Image 1: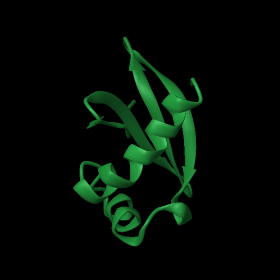
Image 2: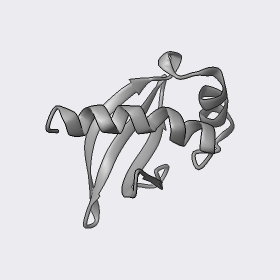
Image 3: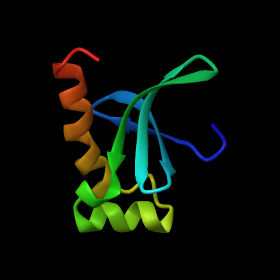
Length: 78
């Protein structure tokens, strides 16, 4: 998880890692990560995309954008 950052979304811990043109989103599982989704950076609102590009993975703009993604994962039972 060297380039990964743990963030809190909706009271739960998630791991995010930029990789190429995507942002990987996962859940910590002990010393490992269960990756849930690869989100195309182009789908993020501009403030969230700018946060990823500047390395600010803890930004409120990014957290707000990712909250919908993780809620959709929970709804579909991932």
